[in-house]
Length: 539
Image (cartoon, rainbow, N blue to C red; front, top):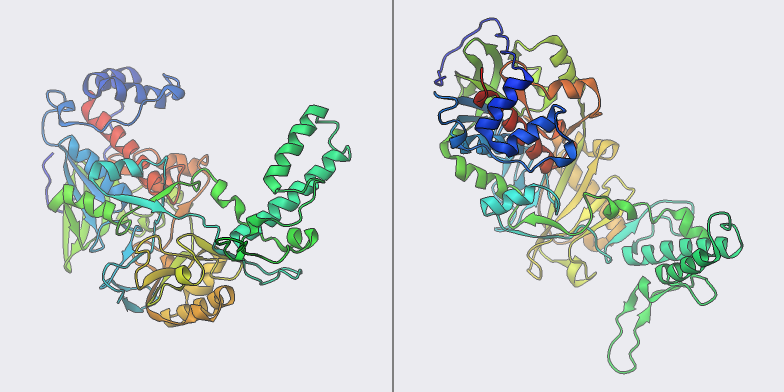
């Protein structure tokens, strides 16, 4: 169907039913064995464990199988939208991407000099960061296993390591112990926590408390492990360790360095909760190594834009989408002018909680399902300093300090090492902690963040500040949430995995990697495969 620019409002056309047998026959001919086997698995005709990797559709898949013009409107130029448009473009689809913002990436947003934004509180900020300096308001890291890295390779986006954890950063938590609101390095906190836990387990085993589950050989092996893991003394006690660090580094000759003061008592360490964040980098999707694009996460989406060219229409605010006999009509405004486009299909990547505001003829159960997604409050603040005190004074190169204060964490730059300035993320928090910042002005956010950060890193935290920029995703136009989540086994979630006539939904919220670019990409690829199978298969 040729793209037409007109408004059409007619009754929703029912999708043509396709039997399993005819679907698989057509898919095998047009998509190849890989696509066919993946689809067989999806509908239960082949074991899921044998799934093959996604293969992007190619133009050859349609030649002689589905003659004619095939058009798709993609709503949103975030990760899911750009990925869907890019993959569909490989097969020769006439793709139009409508994006309300004037930039690609959606919630993947890198703040640089000149970035300007007016939030839903009515406040306008303009970034004055120094040239080359930035921070990622949205996504900032990529696990090794995520398909995001495959797109970096394919699109030529250079990557670098991301410091997800650092032994020299600090922890600072409130408690009813002498450690309350006291900053200590991650390395010292880990040494003490792991040391005392090892001592406790060693005592339990040596006193026979584990005899019902461990043999004598088991207990011997466990003792060897715990001695090394906790750096225990010969009699099984944790007495402190060089793992805690030094106040002055060991040097030459007889300069043995000055070790940190002995650790607090076992009871104080355990009750203080200083180890509450240690499991973070144990998580599958947070384990080192982590990566990030050089120059900002949005480099990925500018690379997509380079491939898609003028098929991406920025400043196009979608106001309606309706299934019509000819396909799907989408209404939008561009430069203050009302326009419309009718295409064979639509891939809608607009956040689920915003779709109901559009003019639409979606069924009631679909609208209810869209409303079921739970929105998340989250945001960040970038602070540019004219002195990299974290490197010169505290020997911190990347990573994050953690706290139970409202700022939650302070993230240090992973770039421009040893330069004269840098941008620190003064907070990255979610939920109630971020709600403490959400309604504040930027100046108020900065003041609160500097005050709390100084309680962790000292008065230098308040000095040498040259510029700053903050954002709250629930107060950001066209997003109004950092991410949307729900139970992926729920009927609402499963309903939105299916198209509504010619409208398909995609986004990280329709994946098992919510809030990750990987989730958006895998969702988009799933939709591309389903849509292409439908077009290429028999009618």
